[in-house]
Length: 249
Image (cartoon, rainbow, N blue to C red; front, side, top):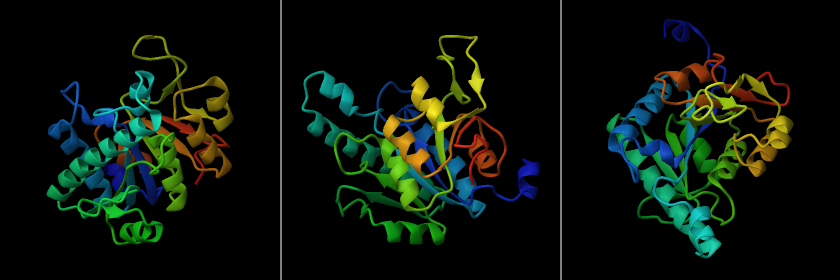
């Protein structure tokens, strides 16, 4: 990545949204330590370049609140269980990062002082300024809100310049690329197009928050080594969702 070495970063502070499924790796359920290590290595590379990174992790590899609710569990209770699953993932990622000597803080929207700091906006920003990676756990602390919405909310609160939505495919497609080999990937999209077409970028609340505040969303393939760094340095990878289709910033 010699070209990246010579470039200036396009985004100096960003929030990365990871799905819980990203932690599955070889498994059908739970956390694969090898996969977490791969993710941590990518984040550590970015951190070593002096860029400020926050992370929101989902919990779908352990528990999915909406699915449990559909099977008869009280929705609020199911969502709280899902929030606790995100804490488990966050602690696993923190451990992998600190094995790489990357200073990391987990901030939880549900207070659990034995394992994580409470979420405090100013403290989170200060951690970023000191070169630490901050992992936001337990969603917003409220049921009925997804970790997509958490990502949009926290990104705005810490004045991130973009949300990086990490996925297992190259970007946003007009149909499921896993099922349709002729699916076409969008290079750019407007927030309104995402909402009107029901494209699976982030949920509608998260997209609306980003639209109202002109916060670009970049959807990219996290399984390709170096992609996070390339996105932060402005390389056109994946799909950019922005009001001007130009990437914001």
